Image 1 (cartoon, rainbow, N blue to C red):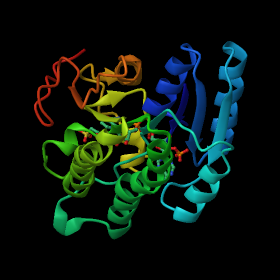
Image 2: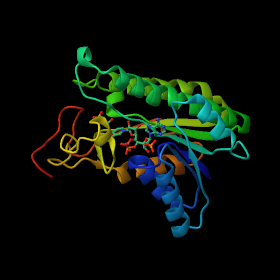
Image 3: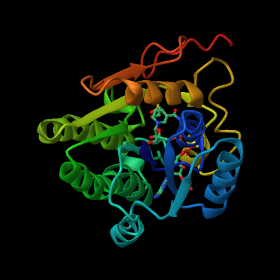
Image 4: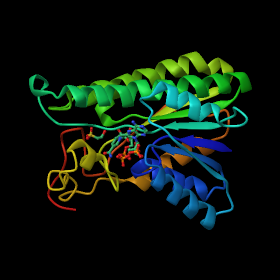
Length: 250
Ligand code: NDP
Ligand code: 8X3
């Protein structure tokens, strides 16, 4: 299958690329950091007998998205994993940073839409395909200081459901994974603007690993064509809700 993963330069996206490569899929990996994409392509093509294409673009820029995707030769994608996304900041609403808000809204909502609009059009034409959005517990439960990030992920939750309604009649599967905390990602470092001390949020409990989420994505993809997994809420065992975490040690 030909599988496009946005945000494959690190974290969940990269772990998903690594796992799907072992299943001999043709991968199209995207992100803004070209060097990381090139390194991953070299690694995966050396380790597996697969084709890896890379596309470097910012999902927030509609022209870049269109140019990059239209560069693909045959307008056929079997699976789209809408993973690129981020949180920026952690403050109460009256102290919010406008740039952070815009970056989250533009990436998590508009970027996902720009990519999905093009790829879903191809899927409708081909009468087949699957879209998997990476949502979050933040898309299900608002939590203190999460305001705009939670709002963007609630939007992803609504988009997964509405895309499913729009696309099911074209034989297109749509679902999402909604994880709690996931380590082996740059998520916390990005949220806290590279502040390594503040980013140490996984030291006193065992969260999910990026490979755990990758396995769920692979499971959703490998179901028989008549099965559509619509949503998977998943947490590390020590995390019960967005805010209730057993931080007594790993
Ligand atoms: P990472 O920061 O490790 O990965 C984020 C990926 O998104 C990177 O590959 C990054 O690539 C890409 N990305 C970010 N902004 C853009 C952009 N403007 N254009 C193109 N690509 C972009 O974090 P995660 O792996 O954790 O995040 C993946 C998804 O999982 C996100 O949607 C996140 O919200 C979600 N999630 C994460 C959880 C966690 O606890 N880690 C829990 C629940 C959901 P590059 O910088 O090269 O552009
Ligand atoms: C990432 C998990 O709890 O930081 O979506 O929102 S959380």
